[in-house]
Image 1: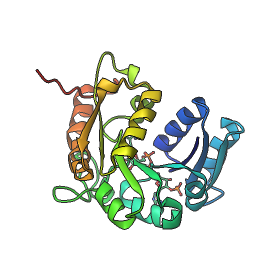
Image 2: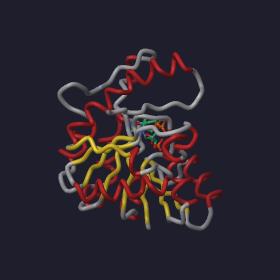
Image 3: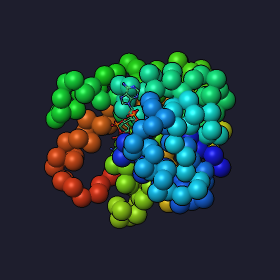
Length: 218
Ligand SMILES: NC(=O)c1ccc[n+]([C@@H]2O[C@H](COP(=O)([O-])OP(=O)(O)OC[C@H]3O[C@@H](n4cnc5c(N)ncnc54)[C@H](OP(=O)(O)O)[C@@H]3O)[C@@H](O)[C@H]2O)c1
């Protein structure tokens, strides 16, 4: 399958590497077609790896991943072009960190009554936005076995078929179906984005060891 990964940071590269390792073809997108990180990634990731602008990657991908800085995601997606998003699954892993506020503690640029995922869906009504994987470090996104035993990945979105397709992709990443929790409509992304604040305190308390949360029910 062809994926467009928008984002040249640690998350974009980690997801792009995983997709390549699973046999997919990936175009990594950036503000610049000559972004050094993207070009270096494509040069080392093999013949199925490509680099280009956000628009190039979005045009290329049958499924798209938003792995851009949360505060810049709408700008990056505008550059990707609404036409290139139309009808496609857009997996949103970004978190709307208010960078200017400094960290720690993390503050969010949108929360409570709205979320980045909903902003993206409103801006691109024909994209099929699915929020997932944003509640953990990117190494765990693609290798859940880094954390022992069962632990939870959330999925939010308004399009059930898109969520089912994303759940399938998560399975291919190593997530057992019973660990994939569908939280319902995209407004539930408010909760997973706001989880980042707790995540940052957990990270402070736990340190550099891989961790994730597990939802336990009776
Ligand atoms: N680090 C993790 O483990 C983790 C876990 C969960 C979620 N996340 C979220 O995943 C996303 C990616 O994180 P990251 O650390 O890999 O990268 P990042 O540094 O947050 O974002 C890098 C990407 O954002 C783009 N960008 C930055 N400013 C921009 C602007 N003004 N206009 C357009 N695009 C802009 C960059 O474009 P260029 O390529 O042109 O430089 C680059 O592609 C973030 O939203 C983060 O909160 C991270």
